[in-house]
Image 1 (cartoon, rainbow, N blue to C red):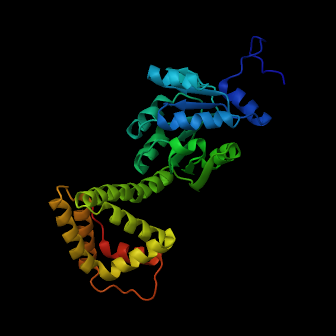
Image 2 (image 1 turned 90 degrees about the vertical axis):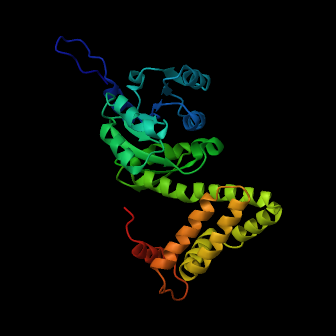
Image 3 (image 1 turned 135 degrees about the vertical axis):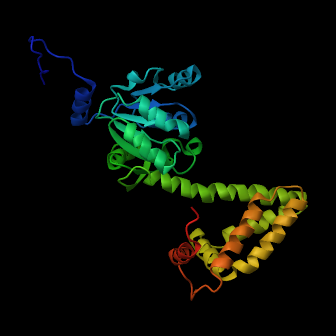
Length: 311
């Protein structure tokens, strides 16, 4: 293929965008860039290189991060312009820095696929999408990149989500496209975190209190037996149904639990909050219309309609 010629008759140099188009048509593997090289990027990038995506450039402010990236086989730079020839750029920075990262990358070519894997709320992801170059992807990691590398499950939304999945699924990434709007993937991650991180916090409070009370082994075994007794979906349906029916009685029990935790010397943050939540449900749904075995969706709908808007 001959290059286009400039008005003076000389062959003009190809731009990053034109080179990207030629590579796309040839089916060549995408050239990857990273903004930031913290825990997520440093565990995802080696797997992508092992899967055949070996052309990687990292832009990072800290010399230590650049040295680590270079040691793992990437080209490393402190200059965002080093990413100008990348087909795909992953923004992998601490959540609150994601908007600044998008702003700093605004001068990159309009053809780049900009994949923001930072932990940020939906409004923040939408703000980043307004500033970022190219085609935006809101990508949210659902799991541990430290444990699973580039195969950690992700959900993706935004105008570039389908293209992101098309490019990287063949290289081992596990990507579920959940919508076309930035912020949808972020919402899934953060609502999931209410449960997963909340469960983590419950383990901390309950098990430390159990140890102080001399009953840790028995409580640990009882909790494990409860969680292992049925599939997680069945547990969710059972707990939501029984919450509607027995919130008043459980509010009293949880208040006693909170007092006991406090008497052990711990601040009963979760115990007290649980008692408050139970009491709220009992007050707002004193006579729940629950028949048979409602599904999770049916129980949640009744709670949602009754609890109102806290704002």
